Image 1 (spheres, rainbow, N blue to C red):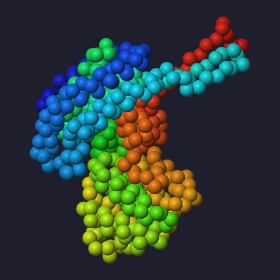
Image 2: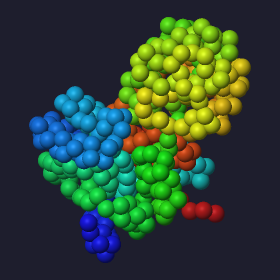
Image 3: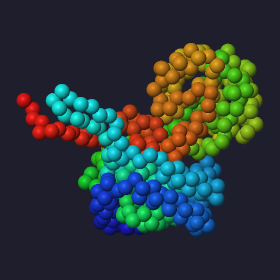
Image 4: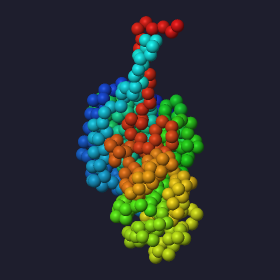
Length: 421
């Protein structure tokens, strides 16, 4: 543990170095950034044994803290997940460089030619919990967009994140880019988070990625702008016109594929007309798979369910639990989602185009889906290579935040001795 003065000095130094690196990255060639990410991918894969050894230390720490099985799953790394991280780095490297992209251009009667072009945000602070892969995703995306980044991972993933960070720094060095472009807070002290939230002279935007308490803390106390990645209170509505085979397949995948990610389904809404057919079949299958179904009174007769309470609506379980409720029609489903959702991801299962259109039109979640698993709520699955989070706010960035969303823009105006009358 360090005292507050030491933490303050540490974070101020990181901020100053990040600001200097950001100034250099703003005009770094696209080829250099691509080379850095490809070299980082190679370094990460080459160091996979060291990364897994570091992860074992974090898993031991997690067991000591009695983390839930879902949280332990978020924390765990194996060769498959490390390979996926390396592939994510290469995917981001292969994307078009967003910096300098002309978003729009036009001529004015005055003789001016105006271009609006993408430009880096500057320095980004990313505060996250548990999942060490965020280290690779956030570092890659910030670099691709020409930003320096200060990463503050969860205390339980300290060793894993440090090993991944080392690979990113190796990539920067190979490309001749400043190593301070991707920095990682090297201490577990919570005071480092508080310091980041007040670094108005060094950090341009904070991206929190974690549970409700972390995001709430950042939103309440940050003095710099925030891209909020709020809870994934994800709903699936089984419409009267749902296909039973699709419904079973999608709900099972959305709930059980990985319960600890923000795209996992947390509430199942079932149209009354199919509650005793499709609904009952889906719920029985969930129970057989080991899911605890917190059912309302209309579904309580199904053997193996547990009674839902008021606290189950609007709850992010991140575990083998799901709330289930019968609704009289699509409008009741929409009203429930508006009341209890987090505007993250919500889905409708239906073969009725009009019902799907109504669902899409009347809900304003960052991601809305039809007949597809909500576990696709992921930047990689959207073709972004990776994501820094799912932004649930409405300003600047929304939905999966990739490299393009980590840029701002500026206007380039050209004349020919043009003056204003």
